[in-house]
Length: 86
Image 1 (tube, one colour):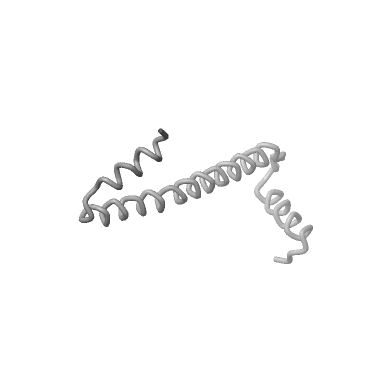
Image 2 (cartoon, one colour):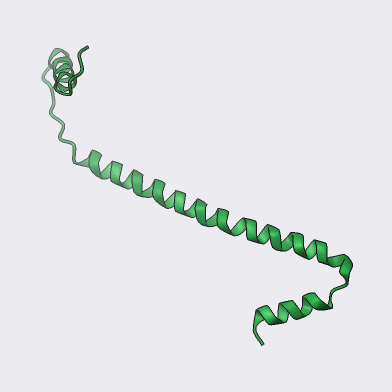
């Protein structure tokens, strides 16, 4: 006999007054399960996104400007190269 069959047999033996409580408990179990899997999927997606971000940041080449003025000019050139005017 499977666990499901044993559980159903026990359910049939319960008095009617307990059935609502058992039904509520089953509903709470069913509602809890999908939320956990969605939560884990979201956590996995966030983790993957952060890993990709840090991998891309690690690949960024940083040049050391000789002065604050040249750094400012580099920033302006970068934004102008993307079509932005400041």
